[in-house]
Image 1 (cartoon, rainbow, N blue to C red):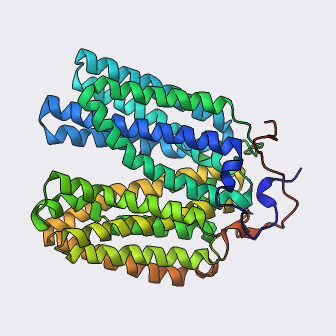
Image 2 (cartoon, one colour):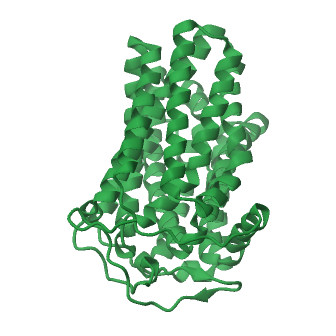
Length: 443
């Protein structure tokens, strides 16, 4: 039987809502949306509770540290597990673990448990979520056919951005009522995801060859390095995030440069997510991109340009507009990168490649914040932001020269899984029909 990834390209989807025709995608998406909202609300509760009890900014920094450690230690092994074992079951185990940690946090909030125990539970929570992360990402191509995958990614990114706006706001209301209530809502969201996962009927997952874990992980890294349609988008996004870290300096801009209060700072903080959500909804209703590679490069260059304008702006409204546009350009980049990387990667390697991608992007987020803060400490916040934007545009020019195949790449629906070192483009064969509401294939 031929695999879904190897089907011939199609010119596009017949409706901007084509992905929602597939029941598995609908259930997976709305389950993920609930989890993101619950997790965002839980994050608000954690920050509020720890700072209220300690009055120590370093205590908040420790929250980030204990949650970042599993990303560095467990992401690559999680990618191996996602390729080696059933991804749905891994994700269900991850959600079960998250449910238990949320319930534990609720218990600690009620009983005013020790802060060190909260950190331990947060470490466990981040660990179980990280173990399920690559499985979650690698499942998406199994929910829809290749010609609809671009549309599904557009809806996924726009709705996840919406959860980034709704979750903290909802969390703030819930925390004002009850801190343990926020943890209980997070537990309910992960349990709901488990229930939805049990109803999914996925297309078969390609088996990964058996072998030592370290050798399998090394194969995933080699695949990313040798396949330029994967390495190019991942590394470009990494450097864009590393250099364009204006969001980390927002408290300085809000108070010292723009002269706004906490409410103004809240608007500034929400602007990138609002821009990303609006762009995601627009992309979902537009035809598939015909020159995806060039669009990716231009979107990252646009991100750098609006970052420069934000850096030199002293007007609140202009700064707000530029932050909104950073979200717009970033969303275009995310859609293209996620679609291209997933479609070019064979299904039996998607977990490991997703893990490598997470390491690239996750580490650049943390290092980008450090880089922005260090340059701001040495030369001032304006120099930090403007130089980052200029560097971002410079990286685009360099990547356009280093990755000519990426620059020339056309429609995302034409991407096909590539295997071997060096590149071997697979010959298209007849695809397997994807699941719909009335006709879902068995696992």
